Amino acid sequence: MFEQCLTQVCEENFKDKIEVITYLANLAGESKKISNVEDYIKAVLLREEIVSTAIGYGVAIPHGESDTVNETFVGCLKLTKPILWDGVETSLIFMIGVSTENREKEHLKILAMLSRSLMREEFRTRLNNAKTSEDYFGIIKELEN
Image 1 (tube, helix red, strand yellow):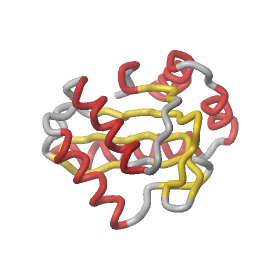
Image 2: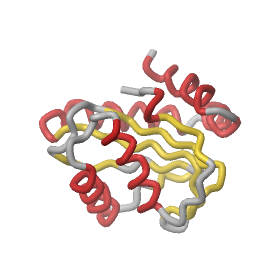
Image 3: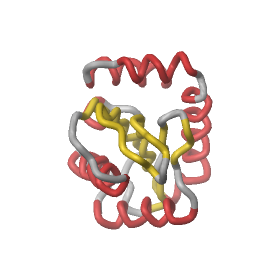
Image 4: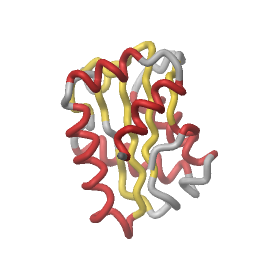
């Protein structure tokens, strides 16, 4: 579910959540996790219109239901320059991609696991202190155990 190619410490200056979602969707497209980047972005933004996926503590967990997801993934991004995500300063983003057919089974399981882990201050501190994409990935990979 977590892969190095979808996990980054990123120094780019994003102006808003749309740019972050687009960036992560493009990474997923490059790794063949999704077949249509534009459709997937639309699905995630549609979900954002319903209710923000910023959960506090500097964390957002965007996701969307889409037939364009080929393989379940979680795109993980640590921003060195936080953005405002619906008014909430955010630097840790975890974008979930699950196919429509696996949505019920996998989506809620991943969301629950991420939410539970990210509520722990110690875990968030470790993520925030990661200096490299490799370090960040190592910490996130622990969640699969």
